[in-house]
Image (cartoon, helix red, strand yellow):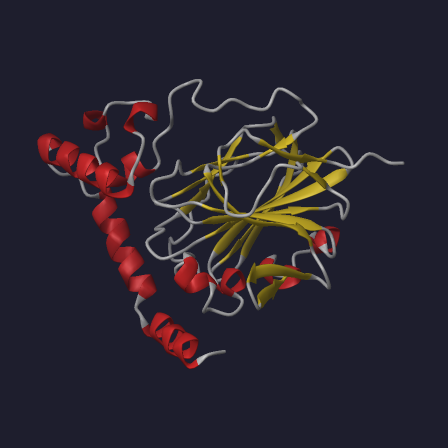
Length: 286
């Protein structure tokens, strides 16, 4: 690691990310007078480049910044790929990387990797994803913050892992070792037919909360220990159903329980992708 990287890492580790995130969370939930709130929403939208024409409601109908961050979009904004065999992108964001998982480690950035087992906090289901395939999506503040299921199936478990709130932008990605294993995360395990999928929602600086749709769980509510929940009768999911919500933006890591998962040939690292776009399909038995 270069001297510059060591200095950046030291600064990021000493920066009060958790306190700053809590403060931002309080601010984002504060209700200002309607006229002031509308101006605040507009200022934020212009600052980060949000497409206001896609929002479900007009700006004045969002009573807090958090309500605006977690806005739904107009019906028809997202169109699911018409081929039901295709798995779809779970979010609007940048496809950072994808491919095979070699030696039980995933690519974080050039020269940096992290462990599948550590990412999943050694969950009993983690064996399904060792040496298989992955895709990583980064959501910026301008993106839509709701997370959707790439395929139909059933939710086997949720696993919450408390942790740090380092930034997941390029600064954190290239300078914090094991970044996604150190940050807070909420994992949704899905079974789709005979295949397994893990949707790993990673927290970051100013991401005040991550919530799950299938159960009344919200992160950053004072939890200090991992929490895991299962269902006697697993709730079913349709392709495109909402599975969770970020506040502000962060990262989603998809883990596919199949080494020969077939990615779409036109996918490229660094491309901005929309929820509903085909990203690949399960390989069929030969």
